Amino acid sequence: MANPLYDTLFGIHADKSTPFLHLSDGTTVTHADFLTLAARFAHALTNAGVTPGDRVAAQIEKSPQSLALYAACVQAGIVFLPLNTAYTVSELTYFIENSGARLLVCDVAKEAELSPMAVSLGTETLTLNADGSGSLSDRAQDCPDSFDTVARHSDDLAAFLYTSGTTGRSKGAMLTQKNLLSNAKTLAAYWEFSDADTLLHALPIFHTHGLFVATNIALLSGSAMIFLPKFDLDAVLRLMPQATAMMGVPTFYTRLLADPRFTRELTAHMRLFISGSAPLLAETHSQFEGRTGHRILERYGMTETNMNTSNPYTGERRAGTVGFPLPGVELKITDPSTGEVIPDGKVGQIEVRGPNVFKGYWQMPEKTAAELRSDGFFITGDLGTVDDDGYVHIVGRNKDLIISGGYNIYPKEIELVLDAHPDVLESAVIGVPHADFGETVVGVIVPAPGRTPDLEAIALTTTTALARFKQPRKLISVDELPRNTMGKVQKNLLRDAYRDIFAAS
Ligand code: MCA
Ligand code: AMP
Image (cartoon, rainbow, N blue to C red; front, side, top):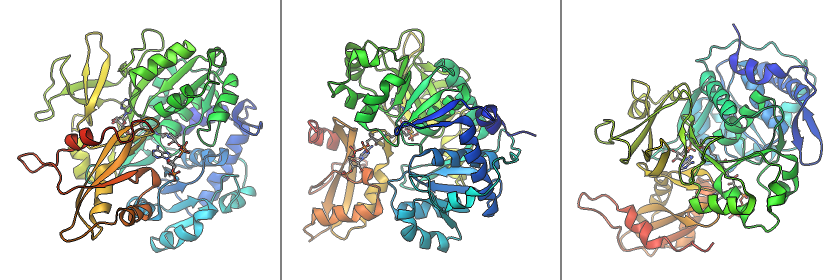
């Protein structure tokens, strides 16, 4: 038995001295070098007692080594669990405990605060730093440079990605080898990636977009990547002339457009710009075309499903739409209350089915059953419509979600933290328009009876509980929250009331 994901993405490059990662210091990691690194890591993981099916959690900076840890996990049949580097100890504790991770890999700078928590949960800790050093690398150094790939079935788990929920509890989305591989194959073909491409990679690699969409496609098609530690405008502008394609969240494109150095000449040789993870404003789409002559290709996906729809590579890339269902993906628009299909042109909830759709939420059968129908359709929580030409439009969300700079933020999680403060009776967290991040977080609180809330002190409590990107950028105190006759908080009224407070940021 083989290991389809490893064989198809990584194994095909064995012994090839072709360039894989171009780094910002001018050096290049070849495919062969990368696979050697991955094989040594696979030995180090196995020597540490990690066995196939175990979870390895990683909160590490983006580097060739951190990407090699992903490859090592795939090769050794280990479930890879990447975590946002912004998460706090409190958030990490939940992920480690819930996933039952066997091993946590973190930066040495975080080891002192994370290790006691990991020990208490029976999880070993190793370190991997941004420069590639650390105890994992030390252990890998003398290991053999090849590793016997562990056989896996296409339905075996390859990765866990945690996604928050409307109840405030994060859920581990279980992604199989087939989920990842089928989507990579579809996208690489749909977007015509080849070994002639160089992908400008400035996304983080702890989410679907940067890890699976970008990296898996590059691996599958033999493309090289300009592998930047993060989105750094100067570096992106400097290195774009060496790239043929770029993937980004809308913030990447608005930041580029705000810089006069971003010109038609700079992008003349580029083949493709792709946007996703958050809505791309039609205005950004047309400004981009006006400046560069390129039409950004927008696509739509989720952690649970990988990519579902895409505008066409050849054919009209229609602004304000997310294109057509990808080959092999079925999409229907249903009535949220009955689940019945509703006619084209009408707005309803988007449901999708295909080999891309995940296996369920880790140890949460009720939540899985609530969102993944027994016939395989996944209820995305997005509201949309399909126009006469078949283009899918996302018009809203049936879930309480804020997307800031491409990161998903579930208000409930923040409301639970605010509500726990003694000065707070209740709270409502909303997303308001923000020029850079698309949306940003505002917390509206009602003081507890007889208390005068100290907003700065309340804000401080969010800093230990929540990653920086989730922390409200503004707290507002009101006498009461607007409610409908059913007693439900009317967040739309709050959004309307505060929609301009960050408009010019
Ligand atoms: C950083 N900060 C943020 C965000 N990022 N705050 C809100 N939202 C954010 N996204 C904080 C920093 O901690 C800092 O806090 C302050 O904002 C300013 O930081 P800045 O230097 O401007 O930020 P940055 O480092 O340049 O990052 C912005 C970014 C980054 C480049 C937009 O967030 C990013 O790379 N986003 C991509 C996310 C992504 O890959 N999403 C895909 C998810 P302080 O106040 O302390 O200074 S996968 C997905 O959604 C699905 C499957 C899909 O369809 O793809
Ligand atoms: P995540 O939970 O990080 O996987 O984010 C998935 C959510 O991001 C989707 O359910 C959508 O609400 C949103 N999303 C992703 N791509 C797009 C897009 N191109 N346009 C609008 N929303 C998007």
